[in-house]
Length: 430
Image (tube, rainbow, N blue to C red; front, side, top):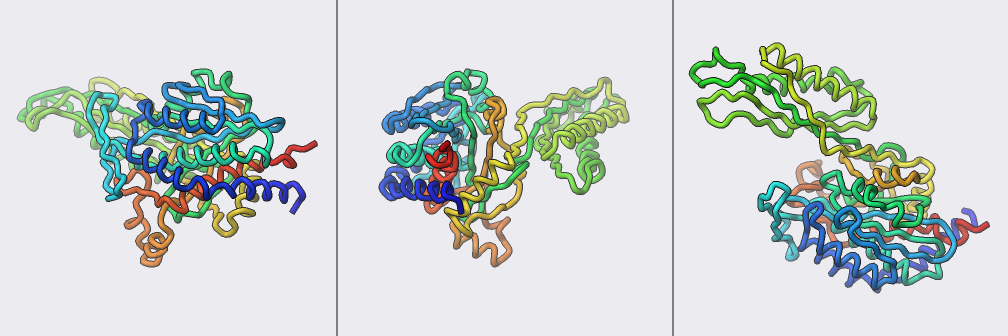
């Protein structure tokens, strides 16, 4: 191990000595965020609390970047600039965890419908961990030098928050980063850390297909072109896209999540709508899948004698999260030095994120890793029974509930360890 690596380890240890002193504060903070979730672009109270905590820790704070985004900058002498991001928004989900701090919140969604709201994805963990790491770094400025940027992003669940922060002048608000990081709590044992080089989270696109028919009375089908039958034919044929048009060693998922048509049992409608989700780890594969979907829908419409070709609309685009290899290698080495055997590459994940829009726009390398959030004993018991998929709630489930520890302490430590790879004085000494 080099002198620089030894120095970074010592600096991390010095900073993390303060972790025990913030545990109660961090747990209370997490419970507050968990109990009071807010939907995408409605994270007003969350952002206010984040700004308050950063200000108290000595950060220069800018609010309302891209609706409710918050950035805290802590300059501490010469050295690199490290950016760490946490997402703040929650989901329209009714929580069913049984926790004494479970959410009972409701809110109006974008359509004006009142919906339940819960942190079923774990963004409350991300916020609490980044605030914890930001505080520890501020309390131990003698152990590092450079600049730490704590970025709190809205609207990740809508795939708009990162892009909106960039478009709202993020680059002019913060010093230019040298590297950017993010992490996500996932459904594997708490205390474990999963870095992965290259593609880590899939790209995702949603597509809305409107097929056109000819309406008629249900008793006179010969006068119609039934769009519900047409839509059903498209659904069945789309099942062949991945199995017959994507190479076996490539990855793709096509999910038809919604189909809608008609208003009454004895009315044949004049249109139907399908909504699809497409995920891949390769832009070329994504393009091929989208073209196949359009070809199939158009051909089925022609075969049905539809009066017009289908309409196609792409929305909710999530970019590919592709970790920089060199950056991830440095992080993996540092994580392994600190966490030992708790570091394991669990491979790429088929979930999607918009974080990479930020470092891509800023032109800096980035790495995104996973941390576990499930009680290790519970996970081990399910693994022994072979029932992990059935018994362990995944992100977005109403039952998803990361255990406080060691989830929060691990997630906080990963940020400090990652930051010190660049910010330990010896890491950037001449």
